[in-house]
Amino acid sequence: MEVGFVMPKIRLNDKTVRGLKARPGAAFTEYVDTLSPGFGVRVYPSGRKSFWVRYRVNGAKRRKQLGLYPEVAVATARQRAQELPREQRQARGRDASSVTLAELAEEYLTKHAELKKKPRSVQEDRRILHKEILPAWGHLCLEEIDVERSADLFDAIAARGAPIMANRTRALASKMWSFAMARGWVRWNPIKATEKPGVERRRDRVLSWTEIASLWQVWEAERSLASAAFQVLLLTGQRKQEVIAMTWSELDDEGWWTMPVMRVKTNNPHRVPIVAQMRRILARLEPLRGDGDFVFASRDRQGRPSHITELKTANRRYIRLTGIEGWSPHTLRHTAVTRMAELKIPRHIRELIFNHAPGGTNARYDHWEYADEVKAAMKRWADHLESVVAS
Image 1 (cartoon, rainbow, N blue to C red):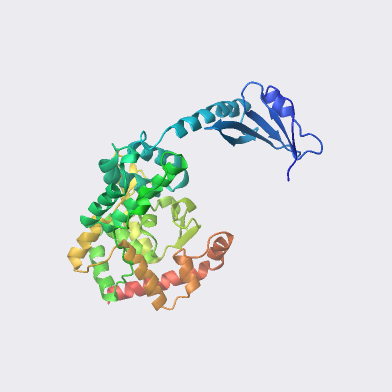
Image 2 (cartoon, rainbow, N blue to C red):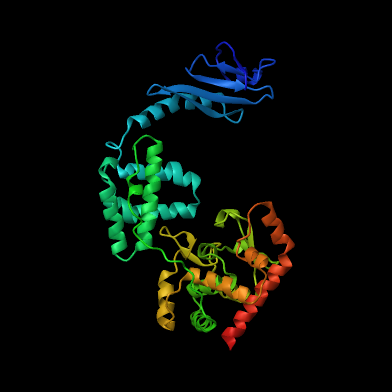
């Protein structure tokens, strides 16, 4: 058990804090500020200095760390020590009768989603909020949203033929209520009492070689950004969002497409060989590059360089043109996984190609150690694919 020592109060400023030392023999020594009640700094024998604030909310004692000195200046820590108790009391003073769903949504996005989720996930949360939740509940206080009202919304989404979206909406709403519970705004989560409205089927469709050949011929004839994206999806077997957000700067002269960790779903470092067939597709897109870095270039609503964001319209067009139904961009990844196994490509090499390998340092070493094998496997797959299309 740590035994600390509290010194008499002093005025904390940069000069005094810089010279503070731990009392000999104590696990730590705390110095309390004379200007701001409850504000102080803990000094350890190692020299580490940590700011803190103590306060009460509804009679309950609270203590919060405010950062280390000198990374956090004394003035900054003192200001935060004065603001934090006030913010906590205001938050605790709010409840389900005063917080609207629109207010909860904004708090959830700015203080949870944007801090803890990837940009792609935050974008999806915003989309579901603005399309499904806010139009129905935005004006309501949280206490007005009960189990019955929640179930009605989710069932209505499922009834229009969107069971998966109903499930996604329910999941997001439940996360938001958990967020509200942690802040004392609500006492329970009515979303958890509802049933899952949609049945999600496994996306295990695998294209036959004949279907692959038919689709590839349509893509090759069309030669559009969308068709090129579908070709790269099947050639590489990577995830849709990873492919459509590909940038030219991720492609190197040594024949590798290297994705930064922030763009990879598994948070593992990942690189994919650029086979000859993929290089030919990229060469067709080079003249369309424009002033941006995205391979599948487009513009956002403000006219800024971006990338294509969806393939649903093109997917439906290719279904209509070929008569091949029941497939999606994810089907192409699953097809590549299955057909590579059919070609007897070893499992550990397939796992590296599709980024199914465990994360961490070993994953990085494996990518380098088996680089030649990964390149050979990708070439074998692409060559076989090309021969099937040609025949």
